[in-house]
Length: 91
Image (cartoon, rainbow, N blue to C red; front, side, top):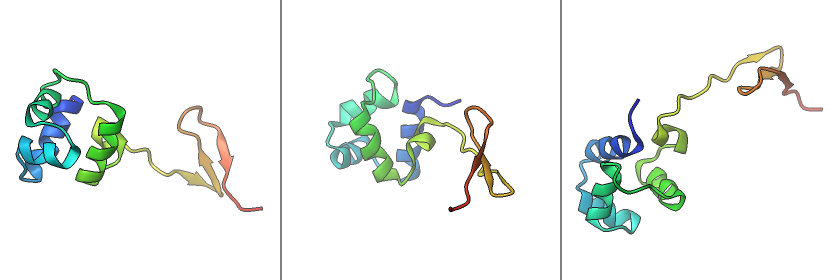
């Protein structure tokens, strides 16, 4: 599994951006972007949402969390945490 820094670097490179260019978009210095990419500086929550906007990804995608399937059965969805069936029909 990729670290968040590795994911930021991958997204930045896929967008053909330099650390300087990404830094300008997210309000950080080039060296701060580099430190985040090398996991030497934490990525704060405000920065996560800005990065998600810049790269058009969800926070789960940024953190490498797999997307849950939208499993429904007879109008009921399965809770991803406990496995309980949730009635999704409008009343």
